Structure formats: C-alpha cells, structure tokens
Amino acid sequence: MANEKVNANSNFVQNSLEVGVDRFDYNAPAELYPGRNRKSARKVSYRRFETAADAIRFAVEELPEPLLLGACIEINEQRLNYKDIQALYASDQYPLEKPVS
Image 1 (cartoon, one colour):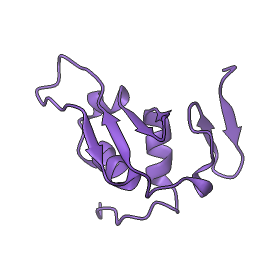
Image 2 (spheres, rainbow, N blue to C red):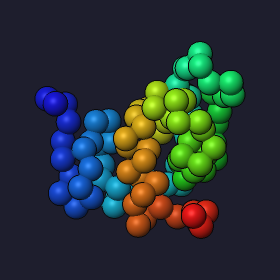
Image 3 (cartoon, rainbow, N blue to C red):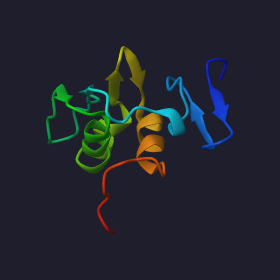
C-alpha cells in the first residue's frame, strides 16, 4: 500500500489516479486496454475513445467482469486500473447518463 493514497473527498483508494474524481477530465481522449482472460468467450481488443467518459462507460457497462478486472484506461500517459475506473463511473461528476437498474 505504499503507492496508494486515500482521497477523503471521494472515499476511494487511489492507485494510479493522480487527481481526485472531482478534478478528473472526463473529456480527454482515452485508450482502453482490456484485461486478458482465457475463460471469457468474448474477445475485446484495444480501443480508442474520443472521451474518457466514453471509455469508462464502455469498460463498466460492456466489458465482461473478468476483462474489467485486468482492464486499464490510459489518459494523457496516466494509467487507471479497474478500481479507478469504477470510482470514476460511480462519481457524481460522471457526465454520461447511466442505465436504470
């Protein structure tokens, strides 16, 4: 846990997210690197997105859970792991509409 920081404002552990969710740029271009899982029937490869919000939405709503666990989104040479992705998706600042459960 030496490289992890707790953000008191958002109550999540930061691994690679250098700014808090309240200052995250959801409009920045992003690249998604899905995790690898031989058991998953669905194969997803590297994808580019116009916005980080679109990449986060795709990762959370479309990727099978085993692929999300190893997924990484890169934004401005900063890599976000699946915990960062989930925290940004759950944030009140997330700009896209979420599906109704």
